[in-house]
Length: 422
Image (cartoon, rainbow, N blue to C red; front, top):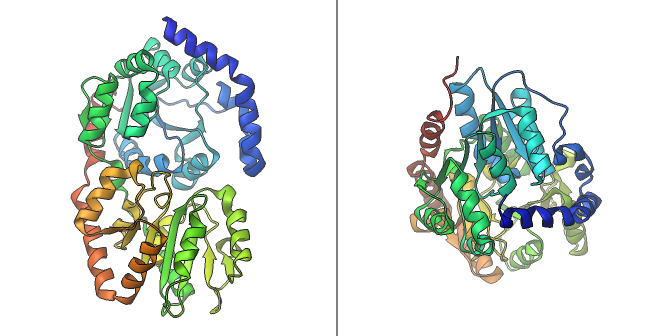
């Protein structure tokens, strides 16, 4: 172990009390953090009797992005077991909703040497796949020592993240060089990864373009729309982050759209009650989606406090705002809105999805707004013009189709590293 890795491991051990405190703190708002603590330190009750292909998807976004790749792996390797690891309870729940009992699910242990070695010894994966921007030095080293091929795919790296990783210099460089393969989303991502020390980075596109709206979600979307009121205009504020709901409600206050129904879906479930309290303070008539009650004519806002229904919400709306972009959170995935043919509104802060956001705006599938005043103007214009909504929606469908194919390219890469399925 070189001195950088030794110092990193020593720092992790010093932070162990904080790790426990962090889990307890998160559990105040999300009690699920109290569950499966043993897994976070490399102890597991589940085991597979079949060869394991392991994919790590941190939370909800990465888990959804992995769906087409997991389906392709299951089709090509029917005798293997897919193991899906997460870091958050919401990611774990998303995995259960998407794949049921078809995949094993557990938490990836924290990056302690003893914990990651236990994880690998327990599951003995034939291949490991990290999605997006997960670089854990001790995990990478343990895979290297155990001769487990480890790939980073659908990799994206914003300038902000690149600067953060660069602070760790040689440690990150050594980890990147121990990866078996790196497949980036864009040329810009590839350049940043190469600058940090990754070798032979290939550009394969974004798996999220390959996510097809499930038929069940589209059927639910039609049902929701009927329940919302087929003659009402419906505005969706999707995956909103802390502080954005107030600004969105300010924007809505200036609209003149008779019967407008707004659906607000906070990004994190632990904020559902917080947003409900905000609606109450504003004196707005609202209903919770979780109540599963008919939407009253006088209802102004539906609080989307349900999990796994985002495609249905997109299918049920006229216009969608993509959260995390009005304030500097980096934005959320806009491809889902485009894939069901709905106009998307974006704030200025889209660095987490910079390439997709710019391409969608250029294609005419999305509009960018600087603040809540511009949001109000753009929304008023869109809700008044069915022709404009139709044009943007069609542009979104074409934009999504044009950028598909990453799953096939990543599969070709992985098949070169896996033994044939029998």
